[in-house]
Amino acid sequence: MAISSPRKREGSRPRRASGGALPQLPWTDVQNPYPPMELLSAAQVEAIHQASLRILGELGIELMSPAARDAMRIYGAEVDEITGTVRFGADVLAKALETVPSAFTLTPRNPAHRVTLGGSHLVFGLVAGPPNVHDCLRGRRPGNHEDYCNFIKLAQHFNAIHVIGNQVCAPVELPAGTRHLDTYLANLVYSDRAYHCTAIGAGRALDGIRMMAIARGHTLEQMAAEPGVITIISVNSPRRFDDAMADGLMAMAQHGQPVVITPFTLMGAMAPVTLAAALAQQNAEALFGMVLAQAVRPGAPVMYGAFTSNVDLRSGAPAFGTPENAKANVASGQLARYYGLPYRTSNASASNVADAQGAYETQMSLWGAVLGGANLVYHAAGWQEGGLTASYEKLVLDVEMLQLMMEFLKPIQVDDEELGLDAIARVPTGGHFFGDAHTLQRYEHAFYQPLVSDWQSHGNWELAGAKDATQRATDVWQRALNEYEQPPMPAEIRAELEAYATQRRAAIGAGEP
Image (cartoon, rainbow, N blue to C red; front, side):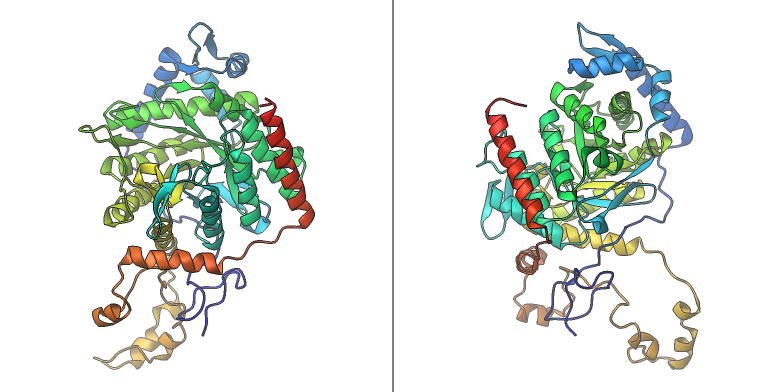
């Protein structure tokens, strides 16, 4: 029986077939039903909290935006205008924690692809930010608009990717000041998922909000009540929020759109070399961004972001998927829950190619994220070369890993039907269950059907071309692009989006922010 397209078989399980569409799991609200791992004791969490309060109250955070400093001063923080340093105590933090939501939803132009961030929900995002792209057919090259659109199509095709990251690759042939308009337009035309805005300054963030509002047929007030876009605020660790990021954060918060505060705390470089110190610094920086968002708009949704890993102290190069990175993923989840905040982390790798190193480092990070109770795994599909390259093959291999994790997270059923005592009684000792009714009734859906893995015998594998997993991934992404179906969009909505982008290009060219 042929496999039907997942878009035409909403809620179906993949079927065993050889001639149909690529097998994949249906779109689903992924939830983690298991208790999070706790690497830190309650006393250790409290010690990190107290250290963070000292950082915030004694050392402070440099906030380069004058408007942001004004907001923090009004909110009760102490501001040193000469140095740009902002300090506050436990009272200001407690005030902000009273209004920040513990969960929120993102509603894209297709409400069926709404996602919830918080609680036990687990959302996977597309890789974001690399300047380069790579595939095994054309090699490594600078990011460009054609590849950008291809990655958005792949994200739309694969149900395991729930949200689109901030510029999966930079389309460097387009003007730097307006290329965000082209990427937002591609996000909306080729996909119906929620996406991340670029928050380098208020203008880029507002463009992302407004274009999603147009796609949904909503006003900005309606968007504020029902968010549809999100952004990452990358802290310039140690202890600095630059003016562009702070202004982007404020624009998002003012319009009720969620922000993910993510310190870039690489141990040995932008943070101390010990994990406890790096966690304390990360915690202080993340909490500072949360307070700023609440100072701008009480109740604005915020996520606790973690990107703590280590560097290779011999070369200074970032390392990911390390034991330290995995432990930081788990411990950061404990800290996020301590404050009642939704939690974002990443599954990343430092490998330069889509190989075994890329897989085991990514899997290490992913397990740390899931065990840590992550709500958003950013860069979940396609990250390569420490974030410098978006890889077609790595995206496919990552989708396989994400689907494996989704299946693992499904609770085990134990009832009379599942226990199968009748089947056990029917099959004689030393027999087999291949032809038993219990097996045949469940044949199509009993087990996960892989996207990439090859379970053939060695002889059949050789006859099929003796391809390794990376080579098979090349075949898969090509098939996925062929199978891709563009989500429908009313002609008048697309025309309005294109007109908005044209108008904004002209305005930016004339010097408007």
